[in-house]
Amino acid sequence: MLYELTNFSELIGPLNVFRYITFRTGGAIMTALLFVFLFGPAIIDMLRLKQGKGQPIRDDGPQTHIAKRGTPTMGGLMILAGFLFSILLWANLSNGYVWVVLGVTLSYGAIGFYDDYLKVKKRTSSGFSGRLRFALELVIAGVATYIIMWLAGDEHSGALALPFFKDVLIYLGPFYVILGVLVIAGAGNAVNLTDGLDGLAIVPVMIAAATFGLIAYLSGNALFANYLQIHHVQGAGELAIICGALIGAGLGFLWFNAPPAMIFMGDTVSLALGGALGAIAVATKHEIVLAIVGGLFVLETLSVIIQVTSYKLTGKRVFRMAPLHHHFEQKGWAEANVVVRFWIISVVLALVGLATLKLR
Image (cartoon, rainbow, N blue to C red; front, side, top):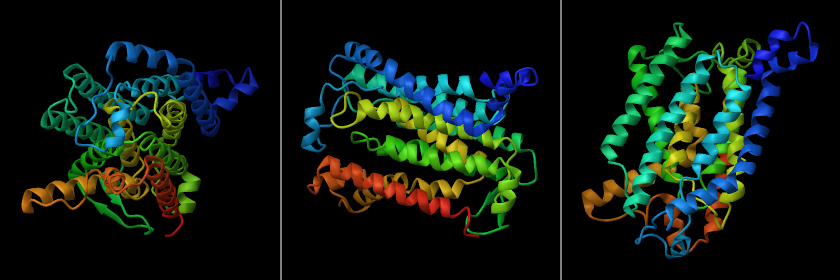
């Protein structure tokens, strides 16, 4: 919206500042942050009133979580509201990549919202049918990947770029859609699995968003992309504003989600934010880098896969409890220790991911 003011920059010189992605990204961060700060308390009060007993707590989970009963869920609504408002205000809405990422985010958010709604209504920790939910996620991811390939419109649109190598591309052609589906849907569910402790998921998401905000900016700039020898994606720089809005909304939410949490994120936004990161990774041709930067989410997902597979095949559990953060809780780690140490891991992995931009 504000980007359109650049049409009058010849008459009013200072309006030219809205052309700069860096300026608008800063504006998106502050707008989303202030939005959540201002409207967050009212949203929490509304959800507490509507939900009554709050999110159901698993009986077989860590005993320390029993005290969290009554805490309202669906807190992701405040993140999505601030996120959407900020993007509509600061992004160039004629950019196709912006609408693709927004479409994935809101679609996944709707799926997660319905899942949260069923959990609260039925007073159970299980909500939406797993198979139907996953099928919808795959369809949305497939459509998004196809549109991203169409927007790119070059011979590299169906290629997978390998980090640490200068000009190595694996051409997948139409099979690239399958890869895109795995990245987007996988990222959404991985973040969802990580959201199990106060503040655990949102900070690694913000770290990944900051990393991919920089990657999007560099990939979208032909000079920087050529210097770093990464794939240039025309128009991808605008995704930095989406990352900025995500960071701002996440910071505002963390104010209310910090231990002891006043509200839980819920599937409403954990699924949505993971899907957004996946879509940005596909658009910027940094799919493998997402697996590095989001390595914490990968570990959490692998812990669940290993646990389920081991139990079905041998009847034995590898971990005391899955996902991985619950395993450490069961070993006696305090919740704060698990959360902060996982944050540290996320920072280290983000630095490794950024190193791929130069180590070629």
